[in-house]
Length: 256
Image 1 (cartoon, rainbow, N blue to C red):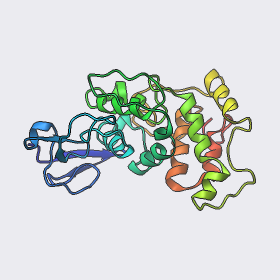
Image 2 (image 1 turned 90 degrees about the vertical axis):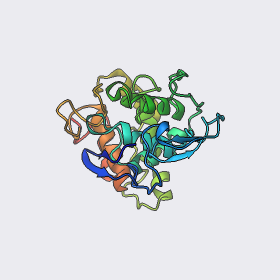
Image 3 (image 1 turned 45 degrees about the vertical axis):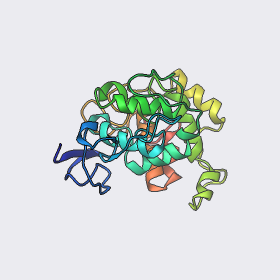
Image 4 (image 1 turned 45 degrees about the horizontal axis):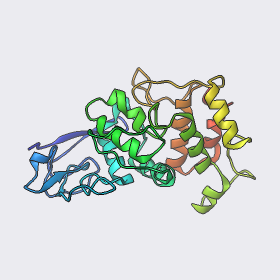
């Protein structure tokens, strides 16, 4: 049984002891694989052992089709050069308010093959696969869905719409500073899809992780979709739609 694990959250490594998973949750037994657990138990994403209960429509209790399970897997398997979410809370926020709302089936890993739709089920499968090959699977498991889970432009435009509007920020108690919201594409989803899809306004860097360049630096500038995703996640993390949502526009003051 493993006695400790090095976790990397937003490129900052720290060590957790045998009593804690990567999310800092106290657990009775630390595990890496099912054989670390007792009879009739399975090892789940936060390195705790739970009772196995067989297969259900959401994959069973050992692998539930939930945002918490998905984000714990992303915390474990997609960090460092393969980073997709700035923080665990940003992952939960995007998942709860966008990803989980898309129609989704559960795909058991590794036996099933996901259908490639923009869904939580597809991302969860790739989040599992990222344990073996993060460079291949983390982008597909991330918020944009990479090239195998409905992305990248469709999810990007929908997530921007989900957060960069008056309705969202009024609902969450943030005072709006610009009449009509801060949605940076005046033509709505169709304009965003067209601008992103043509590749003429900005490019998409298909590296290991959507937020990290080949030199291991966070992509905070440059005329790319990756830079726009970084500022979108920062807007969500900091509850700061102005000016950060405006940085996701086709013509951006920072992503240029």
